[in-house]
Image (cartoon, rainbow, N blue to C red; front, side, top):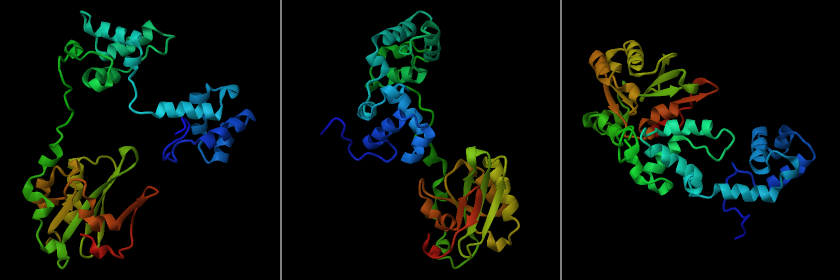
Length: 307
């Protein structure tokens, strides 16, 4: 295989043909925006490509050379910076093992002060941690973990891997839901979900009745935590007759952590889907859509087969 040949390249990445076109158009002094328009790419993609693989100069960008550089950068696994830079590795090891036991954050910031014009002497604190705790990354000795202020030999996980599965009691899982929910013969069984807005700045909750497909929205303009969602569900569900408040099926999101209080206040039995199983709330998924910042209702054709 030729060194310039790519295997199943993704359309996200520039091809050799595109890089050759960029070289020609850039030499003709066309703007990044115009080159991008002709190639169907964004101007930022063209600018970044020339900066990374051409040094930002018109006389230094060649398509074949840029392709070779891009393929070299894309190879995995990559050798860590500490493994390929002995001077940087020696500096980091010295500061970690010195009497003061510098933290990786201190080392990362101090490098900028001690070597202000040497870009090679730069590394993030996260890369230092990984070089210590993940030996496959290479570069630093494993015994340096004892020099860290925590003194841990292994990295402490931020969350238990099985924490999400054990939070919902077995009796509240969807498998324990009454059989009458499945056949849709009796109204009053609901499915709910939370739709988060851009940058998590706002949210809308949805409630869809399985038999009639009647949908109600929960307005959550500021907060969509567990207490806000609880209050929104209570304010909405109590407007319905008691005969239409039988069950509610939701996913295992933290926003429904107050489910017990909802059940206590309304007698609405709440059940939770299995993790990563949105089809178990098929009525809600097939009814509610979101686009252009607004929530709408989809056609109900074929929705009757959803669980």
